[in-house]
Image (cartoon, helix red, strand yellow):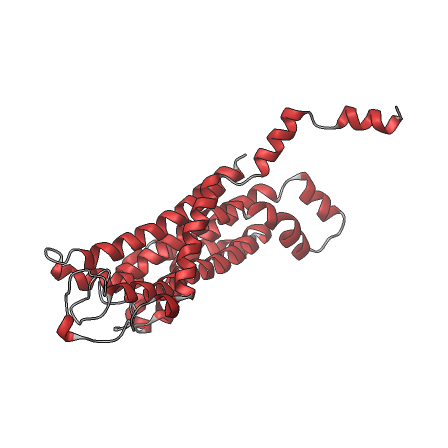
Length: 289
């Protein structure tokens, strides 16, 4: 037997160690279950024109508030519009606002928090004092005020979400970078003369972004629920655009006789939130291994 074979046998991981390494690399099952749920919602939103049996805006007052049937599986609303078609098309609006309402604050907050934490000084102080001011206001009251000031519409809602939600991402990334910037490998990179930007974005940031990725699915749920709440209050998307929160509000007066008008959109929102929650919990479990 050669020397190389001896060294390979000596330093190769044992079978239990190898199995443990494979388990650590493998994503938890809940991530895949949650991803499958969210993927179904995305498919419904993308192929809404093919899946919806009717035009979601078509009025038919003669068949208003019909019970579920083969022609209308979830019945019709107070204007005779097919509820199933409106649910399907509403996924386009809610998923768009949900993802962008979390992604835009994540980009802004992560960039500001990372730069402030690594460079310190006035940049860090300005970022954190601005975050303190934003957090001093009740969240939904500030969102409503911003939507009133900017005007009703999806753009105003996304701007309002970004102005408020960036704070959480800034604080998350800041705490991680403050922990990492004094470690030996960062000091070695500085001693080697690497530019500050390269150290931050190539050596520090990839090791600090884990908690941000864990929080992101939860924030998508918060953004989706925020849009539903605004639409329920009449401050969301402009009617007659279908949206889950607006559909819940529209069905509320008929909750005793046509309970499905509010219940089914609510269940749809809960299902989307469940899928994202499973992803977030699974990623958190995976990062702790």
